[in-house]
Amino acid sequence: MSNNERKHRNNVSGKFYCTDKNDEKQMGCIGCDLCYTNVPEFFAQDAEGFAYVARQPMSPEEIDICMEQLTKCPVNSIGCNGSDE
Image (cartoon, rainbow, N blue to C red; front, side, top):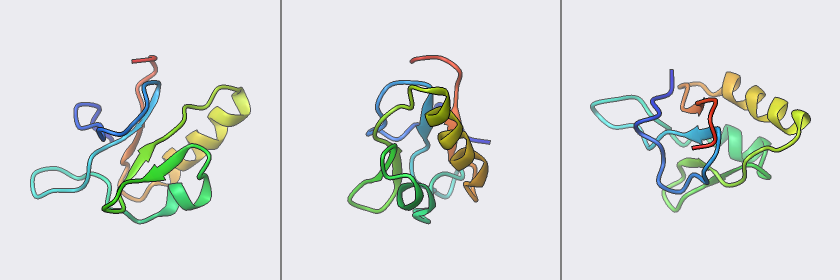
């Protein structure tokens, strides 16, 4: 499960987020490139190759696309906190 207290600093505000990189204390993004390769209109990578949300989905179709990436993330680094914070 993603930890909304470890959000990547580059995430745009909104419901969806990616966690910061994996470290020895907690699992986070491992830079597998799945989300930002499959859906570059919403996800991007930082200089180190770790994912963040570059644009929030707006339509139900876009939300479905981001939810699909959330379920496919191998380390559950993508989260949806249900609020616009």
